[in-house]
Image (tube, rainbow, N blue to C red):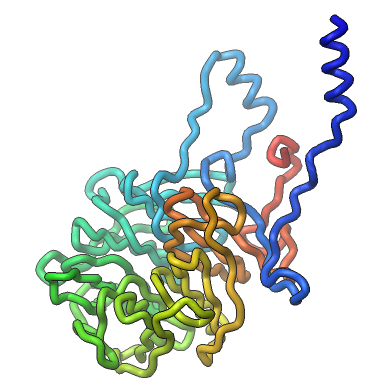
Length: 357
């Protein structure tokens, strides 16, 4: 009993753990622009699980099923819903933040996925998923109902990403090709009926050519930005496929690329490029000048630490969503000018104290 009392006394007098201080970017003494907000891994990160639910589970002797990411690749956000492709689970997992739901789709015929990679969402809410194994793009409604497919194995070799034009009329499919495959290009389709429109680029090192293109994104002005990973640069094309410009070079200095992968362009025209080797995302202004970077390489999945970062998206309120394949997570970063309770993906507990633990 004496030992137990001493133990309890020791525990009672042990100072509490230090309060977690979310990292900010850029760090001091520079003025902070973004702050780490949260990480999405499991259904528990969005679903409400009240004390009443716990009591029911205890009374019935049932265990709560934990569902989450296994090997995420890309992310797209629409009205506070975070859509993540998972190449191992062969599905799209949805963290519905405003609806407090976690759902998945793409696991049943006729909309069954083989190996989903890139993802994008049209202005009307249609979800486009590049299936690299099925060699086509699968299209779903906002709630995951299969609508149609675009492309085929006759024209697509290894479709790794997809992006939709700002007006929702065109679909750009990044065909990564391979060492022995000449299909290093971007194939353009009509979003409505899926007919072939044109092909942008070919394999090579010249202006407007590609070597293992990986991901792409359209800007508000309709221009197309493509990660030309093998040539260590970002190439820019007009909406009709004309080559306009490029930026970046191989290296490890700020503004250079080593293993560029994910890309997105926000509503202000800023360009976000994920580099797997750096473990971060570099942010450029519309004139291609480096503004800052977020994240760094780390051997543990702490906030802002990445081992195999891949896809990225920025929502309408400026929140950044960054996928890491190795740590099986999506880190969310909020502009410091935006409060946590503001925006479509607001982090609000809705009076449930269990969610604030």
